[in-house]
Image 1 (tube, rainbow, N blue to C red):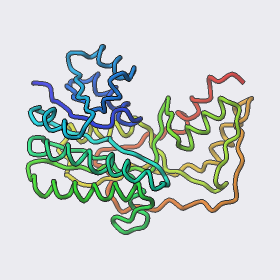
Image 2 (image 1 turned 135 degrees about the vertical axis):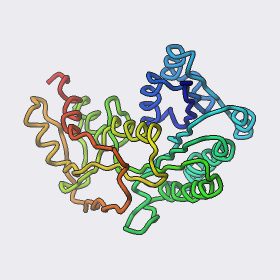
Image 3 (image 1 turned 90 degrees about the vertical axis):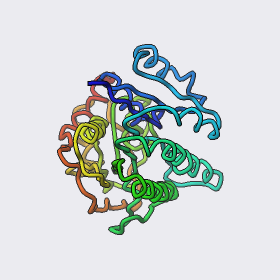
Image 4 (image 1 turned 45 degrees about the vertical axis):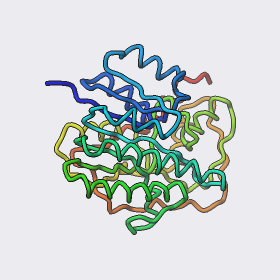
Length: 296
């Protein structure tokens, strides 16, 4: 059986890069669309050298060059990891949100959706502030909502292509350098700094990067109904309880300061669970490993 080819965007980000590393060890060819500034990215160069026979890059500087570079390639699957995330925004951020979360993926969709078997797009539960279908929590989520409407247009237009939206609350993994709470706590612990946390009552719903990769593999390898699915943990993590548990086993304690702000409740979702997908119940154990080898 011939190898399938994946087209990927957003592999310079945490989730996209971890998936890229994983899928290159499997029986797939990969074509990776990256901004020209990533030509010198040492992580990308290392993968290119190691998997030169099955990993190709498309570097672009202008959107106008994408058509020529992508139109003639043949791919089986397209996965859109591309995103620009900020919890709040200033006026100067608007163009970046629109360019990364709407314009860029739309240009790719328009070039490839007629000839691919499956399309997987990543979203966020910030798109669902209440039980209503799409109600954005911030401008970032609003642009993801906007692109989801464009995604729906192509799904109606291209009946032979299966479209999937995968949405999650929070993610975590080893060597996670994003400006999210758990990576920030780990970073500050290593630097012996105090982490300010909005409330003692803060809870997060977190899944491990391996769970996300597993969800993608399920879709690629199975006849899954095209749908929007939520990837979520069965239980929320209570941040204060997590830190208390960690500190019981650490000589050098995690320093935190709890503020007295209200903690936003995690909204329950009516989105479906991905068939055959099971969440890893060892998340706390994996978080602990990030502190285990630190000198106390």
